[in-house]
Amino acid sequence: MKRPINIHEDLIEGCRYNNRKSQLQVYNLYYKAMYNTAFRIVRDSAEAEDVMQEAFLTGFQKIGDYKGDASFGSWMKRIVINRAIDILKKKKEQISLEESGIDLPSDDSTENYLEILSYKIDQIRMGIEQLGDDDRTILSLFLLEGYDHEEISQVLDISNNASRTRYSRARQKLRELLKQQKIDELVN
Image 1 (tube, rainbow, N blue to C red):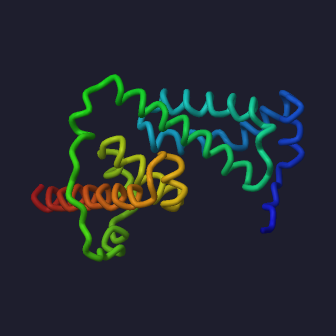
Image 2 (tube, rainbow, N blue to C red):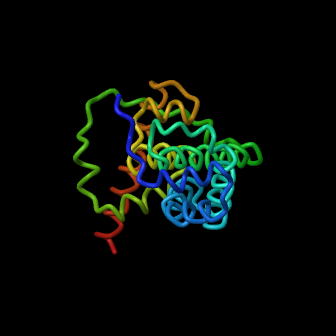
């Protein structure tokens, strides 16, 4: 397998030597994308900022673990996603788990993937924002971050089948929410 080309190799190398100037440049290159990733998962601006900052600190501390097998941005995004998921898990431990305990029946029928794509992107994002943490996380990872089910299963520490099932259920909830919004728009 061909190793990805990293256009910022010199800056990353500077980070390996704890060069503050290199770290600042890397931060400036990647912070917006990492903040957006965190925000899509935690849905809180201040929390997303904290997640991003902590992820960069972790990334700079563990830069020696970065082998260059993937782009630096992908490696950093994995740290952000893991940190954001940790925040959600901690929140769940602090609040009642009533909603997350509901197990919806799975839909085995073949669904038309184009149906969800017919909605405008901003409507989909707004709909995702209205979902619960689990549903929002899995849809964000799959639809917005481009992760496949194998990657999602590793990040969330669930089986590949559980990833697919949770994604299918979350997608169905999103469809229902978007249909309801469309009905509300017609009535109002």
